[in-house]
Image (tube, rainbow, N blue to C red; front, side):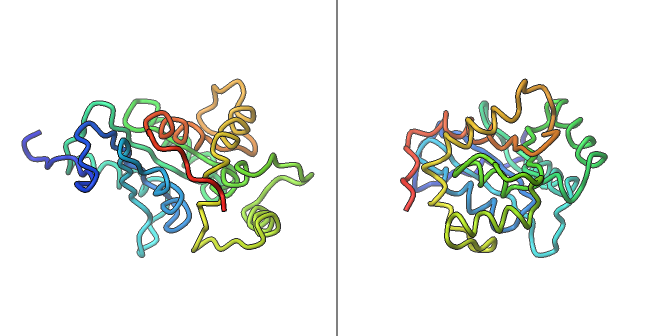
Length: 207
């Protein structure tokens, strides 16, 4: 469209056919730091996090995608993703957003209860008896990793486990027909799998 400006790509990379992933996240720190690690000469990741005004509800996450799409010219193969937690919003709000995603406006990656469950799948299955919560996941990550700071996540420690996380999340999602996880699970594997397919750089080893 004539009113839109060219799609934003990293000029330092200068790969004209690089794929653009536009990822709107509910979180302001953890998710952006994680997805930044997927950038490569073949993949440009544009992250639209929740800002200081704390507009993190699903409808606001999606509105950031819409605003980006209105502003920029997107190319064939570019992808728009909304990354949302289930625990704070519940089925009614998630269902509304999932209906929009199903219509083809964007792709949706819901984690239940939260994004930290996706991070946990990089290191292990969830084997504790209780249903995971945001608090129990942060505690488990802190115990397993020795330290965990939600506002300052050391995402390099997860990158070597991306394929394991995808495998575990796929198993939890079987048969793969639900629009969001019906129990503990994460559909972020769909986004991670797409990112991995497009990049030519192997994820860095965990430290």
